Image (cartoon, rainbow, N blue to C red; front, side, top):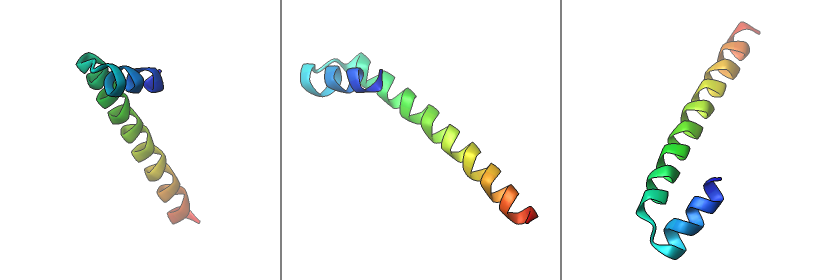
Length: 46
């Protein structure tokens, strides 16, 4: 879905698609942070 929005934003100038890309990237960032914290906690318990 992000790939389609990236195409719309970069190739067709659709600014709403740009907003969706930013939201998607923010969600990915939050997920990555949660995974990093989980890995760190597991590592520190070892």
